[in-house]
Image 1 (cartoon, one colour):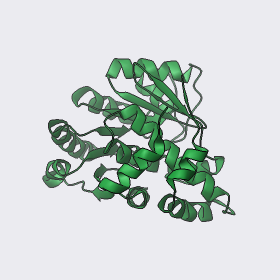
Image 2: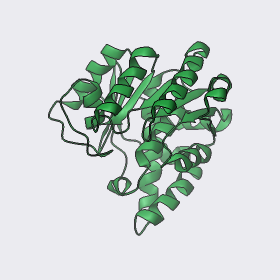
Image 3: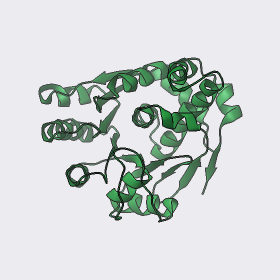
Image 4: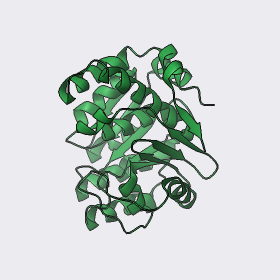
Length: 264
């Protein structure tokens, strides 16, 4: 069984640099969530330094939430550098299934680079897998296909770890699958919780080469903290503030107590 608390301890001990080319709407929150977990976030988007920054990082997080053609080119520069160094590249396919442009750029990144972890909600991942689904902006649309099967098939096709976030998170590669059952509904009322999840996955992948384990553990710790924050929050604004504090103060023993990860 995954020992999420041990990977949390490794993050705090090693304080990895996590390079982001991410969503401008949520960039501040993504930086903060990495920082309170104990790692070191950097948000370097300029093509002139994207490769150099990736060379000093331990993971690279790409998020197409506010994509432009130029921004995707910077992502390619950073990811090629990351691929050369051998650090994990995480792609959040934010909003895939909403517009043809977004779908095209996601597939362009997947077809031309080594993407180690593909992360999205149910309809985003379904669209990347070739299903005829529609995403509601950046909110999940309806998907009829079994999500575990979908994740496994895409993982096999892309030789990647696939993460589908939702009420229960699915983390799969072609050999194993885990379902993370932590988290609270209040997370869906705060913009950026999904983007932060990608940053957390990148943070844990920076210290654990088993990417399925790293992704599941990162989501578990993040969502255990969300459960603790929700107990003391009166609404979304207070919840968001308390979430950062809950992550910062998260005790490994509490993770062990509250972890809900099942193998499939």
